[in-house]
Length: 307
Image 1: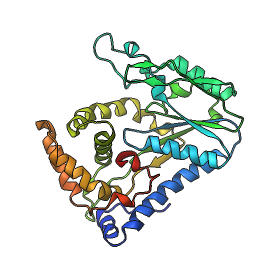
Image 2 (image 1 turned 120 degrees about the vertical axis):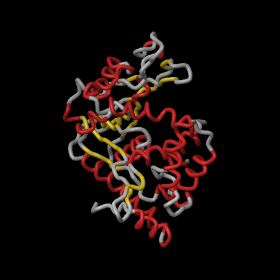
Image 3 (image 1 turned 135 degrees about the horizontal axis):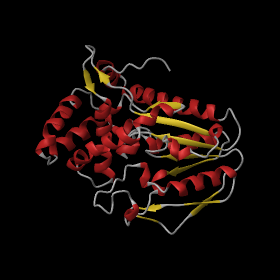
């Protein structure tokens, strides 16, 4: 794919002179990564389970769907399931009885049931697939059935997908592991970091939470440290187990997010402890040339955040 030019001067120049090209290059880079993984998945016939994991706002949801669509278009019918549907009922979550539930730990999942389900799918049996009702904190009574034909696949998406306990008992030759994250910073020509990787994910999450989860900017700040703690404890120790890595950065995104993010940050009622971080982020975002979201394709990963 060649080297990525993640310098703000290059990004802004292209955003001014040829914004369509800036967006198109970002989309093509991401699409080529997904297509290359899909082609590798077809090298060996047989049912497959694809474990896809990454931190918050890395683009897991869109990537799982894009991978599934690409696999299916190449003749490997593929379905997506979320580890969130295998949560224990709320009162069974570790620490719940003590008033301090840990929803991030892998032990918050019904691991025996998950293992039974994955092994059933890999055997080709008709399998009941659960769904979790987060409004009541319990597994729904309604199930969908799924059967994998001999060359079908299922993508398992979630924070813990790379944890070895998830794939224990499965044929390792039938398991593919993928790690996705924003893996590049944006610098200036002097080597100064303008936006780091967590900055970029925070902006994605802030906009998504405001647009789709009725969550304030202050609430995103309040949750962020715990989100990062969960990633440090439960995701990053296993990222090196991945067979493939996807860097989900789109170099056009600071330009596309700029105006919305600045408006949200400047108008938000923030706790004192978040004021300095918000101001630093505003100052960084103001360095980027603004772009219209109308340039973003409808199936872009960025639509996961801006709609």
